[in-house]
Length: 240
Image 1: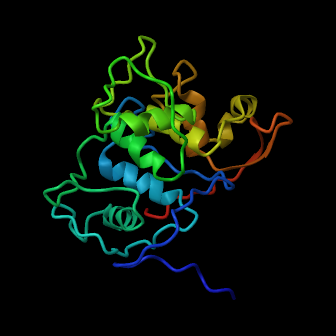
Image 2: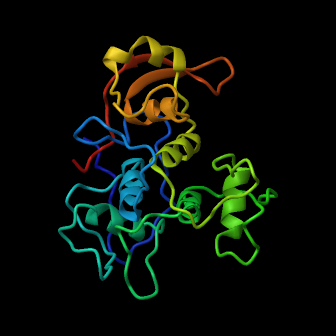
């Protein structure tokens, strides 16, 4: 058999990690009580784990890579993802050597992490509350130009606000060119993973269905929309 792609180790550097856009497997899961909690904030470690699942070359479960943050124990549930994503250059810690894994990730921090997966073009879009002096000014504009992120109706971006699970799903789907087949979802609810706290009245109902259900699909004639063929329940969740 062909050898498996090598994983990074301390002191190595390799090509910018690529996201798996071809396979539409589950990459986020809900909670044990069948809730998704769409308005909950996501923590820095939760986002690190999510993106590590989406890599074409994901980490090996249980392995801890070269990064050494003062507040990430080697037996922490997220240590594999955090150390791997740091090793490949997608995330960074703080000047004091910490990572703050349980801190809510902000909208600006999420935009910066997302932008690490692509060479984005300079953006022209501005937000009323994002000053050129803000550390994430350029990266937020780039992510907005790519169509990944949006502001609010009042023209603001709220860069330092924590990002919600629903917002993360919506942005990540756009990064992956994933868009749920709404008609298929509506007609196959008994086959899908659904949540007691997310119904069709929620703005992220279909994006959440896309992220939490593995499926086979083809592109519509417009080459943008998906036509789902079947539910596969395939998952990128290597860490459970």
